[in-house]
Structures are given as C-alpha cells and as structure tokens.
Image (cartoon, rainbow, N blue to C red; front, side, top):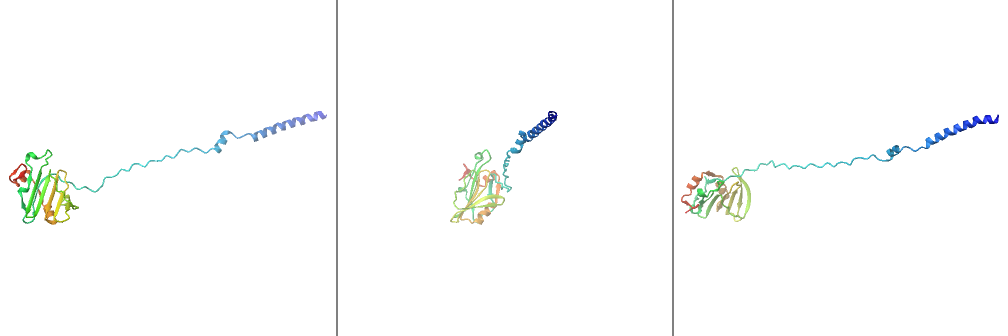
Amino acid sequence: MLKRSLVPLLFVLLCCSACGDQQFGAAQSPSSPASTAGASRPTPRPRPTIARQPAVMTQPSSVPTPPSISFAYLWPSYLPSGLQLSASESQIDRPEEVGAAGLGFYIFTFSNGSSKIIIGGGAVDHFLLPGVDRRLTIGSRPATLTTAPNNNQRQIIFDQRQGQLFLFGTNVSEADLLHVAESLQPLSPTEARRRLPQSSGGSAS
C-alpha cells in the first residue's frame, strides 16, 4: 500500500519540478540583442549642412554720371572788355592734319596787355598749373577749375571723351573766365579756320 501511494506523489513532484524549471528559465532568459541595442545606442543623426551665403552682387550706383563732351571747334560769344584775338599766338589744324576719328586741334589766344585768355581743344595739352582744384558744372558740362596760389592765373579743364578742352586765364577774374567758358559755341571746321586767317602749317603768321 505504501509503494502504491508514493507513485502518484512522485509523479506530481516531477511535474511540479518541470513546471518550476520552465518558469525559472523564462525569468532568467536575457533580453534580445535588438531590444538591448535599441535602448543603449543613440539614434544617429545626419551632420547639419552649413548653407553658404550667396554672393552679394554689388548694384551699380544709381547716381547718373554727367556726360562728357566730344571734340568740337568752339568760339566764345563773350570776351572781357579789350580782349582781342592774337593771331600770332593762335593755331589751328589744317584739314589734312585731322585724325581718323575726326580729332583736330586749335588754340585761340585773346589778349589785352597783361590780360590773356587761351582756349585750347582737341589734340593739345593743357597747362600744368599747380593750385587749388574745384569741381563744378558749367552749363551742362562737368569741369575742374584750378586757381594758382598767387590768384592771378586760372584754368578750366572740361571732361572730354576726345582730346582736351581748356581755358587758361592770366590776370582775368574767375567770374570773367567762367563767363567766357559758358559762352563757348560750336563752329564748323571751315568757319573755325576762317576766323584764324593766314593759317599755314597749322599756325598763324
């Protein structure tokens, strides 16, 4: 009787032991690598892209540039009292001396004793006059006025696309020189040469 009653008890114990092993094994099983990795490793992020500043295009100045003047033969419609054309100190080109671009030259000198005004244009050089420069506009023409330290010599140089255009004054007031500059009028080449008679070799005799 004792042996028969122990058999069912042993069977129950074996079954309970097996159940306990399964529960222990399930409790001690490590977590999967995937779940561990997801908890401990930070999610990689892309490097921030640094946007380059686009090049700033410099806008051209909106201030209009005054137009410069092309070559022309010019003659004053105003002269200070007493000044007369000095043909011996004046000079103008001959037709065959005019350049391919139509650039000729002239120097008209007007004098009265120690007072003198020289008007030069085209393929000529202005005077090298040291002094104080001042920018100004005469009529619609931009120019530079230079006054010598002794205040008895002045020169106006116009901005030109071709050649030179200047007025040089000795013992002439600034107001008179500016007035002469404002009075300049264009002449045809034929008329300009006619006003300087006996023109030979580019100079008056």
